[in-house]
Length: 288
Image 1 (tube, rainbow, N blue to C red):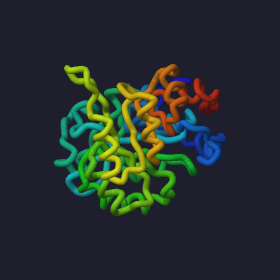
Image 2 (spheres, one colour):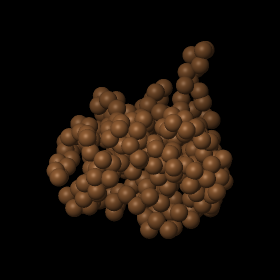
Image 3 (cartoon, helix red, strand yellow):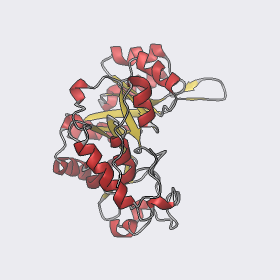
Image 4 (cartoon, helix red, strand yellow):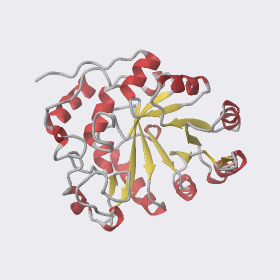
């Protein structure tokens, strides 16, 4: 059911009610069949990415986890936004690291998606944490550098979430390495995007990836869906690492990575993926 012609506040309340009272919470991690379905920036095909409405929509669609992008503001707050500036999601263009939380919160980051989401603001990490149901997960992608780690660990501690509910992911090897050094109990995955160069070679090399996993003490590898083979995934897992994949929106590719042993599949369409892979249909949204 599409959430059309409803104010954001009403959508938030309705979806909150569904998540906490309509049977989504009992989806315990111990009973979830892998791969976990991770909502990429929330249910971002149906609500503005990296916002509370998108994350609540993902929970309604029975996602096992949400994935969000996080950056540090100039005054030391962690906010959920993908780009280094707000150009893509707001009319004003502010650079995140040079802006205060107050300045960023004055922006409307919903109207660019739909007038139904007018007034949606950039959420703090604490607000995103607050949406996570008991025994579901959040994948935290760090989009800046190691300067965020101290504040991140503080926010995680205050959130009340258990360590097993949290997965930190980053393309930055130093971020993964420092996080594991400071909080070894938290899971951290090294993100890698494989690309084919003009000579037809796939980079980075498999050897380099394995070396970086060992150096950073990452718990696993999370890669894009392209230019990766079953044999390499098997090698990753045989060496004691987890394997995760992103961003998969078609069922054929999802089934292939499921067969190859991926522990999670990140997708823009969590509801469709849950239904297609596992026959899970979300309950209807309550009407006014």
